[in-house]
Length: 177
Image (tube, rainbow, N blue to C red):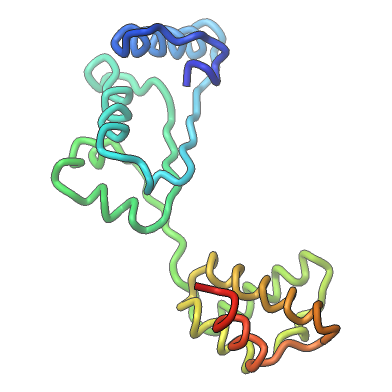
């Protein structure tokens, strides 16, 4: 984080922590800015890193949060944070947002919205193709994106203008884990 702030970190961890808190105080107090830190793929954080985050957020004995922290990750992140050893971190979470799994009609709307954004037409996928995409993805936005993108590439390679359930199953069986 110090590197992101343009500051060379001290050799010892404790010194670096103090240095980071000082920089955050300067940004908040002198510059009058709020600090927001976003950690992507947070489900991959190990125990030691999560503990460091807890210490970072435990500033002046909880009387002042030095920054807003946004942890972005897959569902495994919340599963991990539910463990008793992370109770102190959980207590510091003010808001929790989840993207729920889509049902069949939401999957279709999601695909249509992406196609519209790409200036495509929603008639590219047949109803049965969308059924297969939903079945494979179980409504996960990331999995929908993956299978739909692979199906579009598969169709383009074969100069097909319509993607049916057979093509989706072929892509799933041959190109996706």
